[in-house]
Image (cartoon, rainbow, N blue to C red; front, side, top):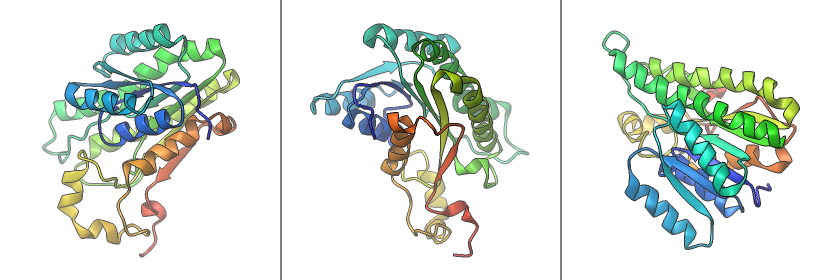
Length: 251
């Protein structure tokens, strides 16, 4: 899969799945800028590690919920490297709570971070990608869009929105040689999902046909596929990377 020399931007790139995406794209020859929210130490660690390998990586602090911030980040990347060809919307949070007790802020924080940020950055890159007649947009969804988990009404709504949004923009942008796809992870070993995984314990693995949790690299390799030059005829797709969790088998 070829991304050699391409310019990429990843939101939420300092840890977990986002860090794996940054590492995978950079290892395959892309120049990668990534957005982080507040953990500058983690972001600096990613940059130092990858630059030591001779890879070109740049960390940018920004609030992905802000349309102005998204516009400024995209403009900065284009100014620095001349273009922007790959966008990965990975930033996301979980704020679980049952519907009866979920407060309005829990709802809004998740919708703004997981869904509105996708709109912000997709709109910000759209004109650049249309003018250069090339682009790869990869949005992060979740199997939660299809499989109900009590206490995740906000999260499920945000990820269902991401999938519908992805399909719609895929049709709008296709004629300009821009693809838009989404990756829907299952249970992946990251600090964000640690509490959910620990609560369910070994029962989770029993529901997954491959009998293991996913690794961040399982997701980053799926992103690499969608980001590659060779994937020009694949658009509007939602790829579940879940070890077979959503197949509905009896185990």
